[in-house]
Length: 226
Image 1 (cartoon, rainbow, N blue to C red):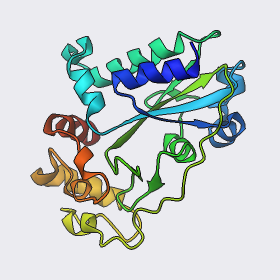
Image 2 (cartoon, one colour; image 1 turned 120 degrees about the vertical axis):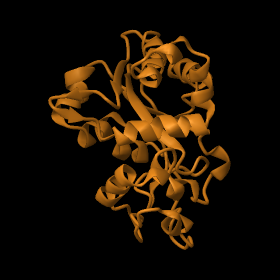
Image 3 (cartoon, rainbow, N blue to C red; image 1 turned 30 degrees about the vertical axis):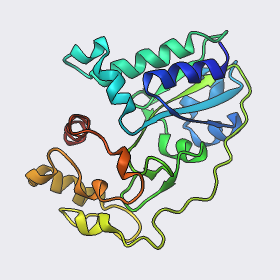
Image 4 (cartoon, one colour; image 1 turned 45 degrees about the vertical axis):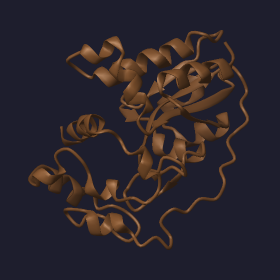
């Protein structure tokens, strides 16, 4: 399988956001236990994989993993990634967002930014030019194929924005340039208005048409509160 075929497989499953990072850039960003020499000596390229909007959830709703009691969405995404990895010779290495090596997680936000996923916003998440804050970073694939690194266009979503996200935030956690994560977490625990959705995220002016469905929002808010 070529990287193009792997990307097509992932897109069919709902993982439609991706971008390449140079192998040397990946190694410079990740902890030692995650470096290519340790996990995938045959790797020649790095693909960062994510999803935007509602498509992944729509595919997941029809998948057998939907009936699992524990981590059903993660199980579905892992299956897609494993299927994509098996098409390479040697098999591509999958670095999943929830995995740890040497006690450390992958710095997926930094890798996704390098891969052209978007720019940091005052909501504390990457803002994608198309999907806005309705973006999730799922994994990296270290593939035995050289890839042309992404060359993201300049994108600054928050400068000059009237920041409706800040005024909508129930707990006043959205600041001028970033999020007060401790205040955000405390508000989510204390205020029932944050139980099923984030008013600040929903107020973002970038990509509102790609906002998650109510079921998708409830799933992610439950994970964040746990």
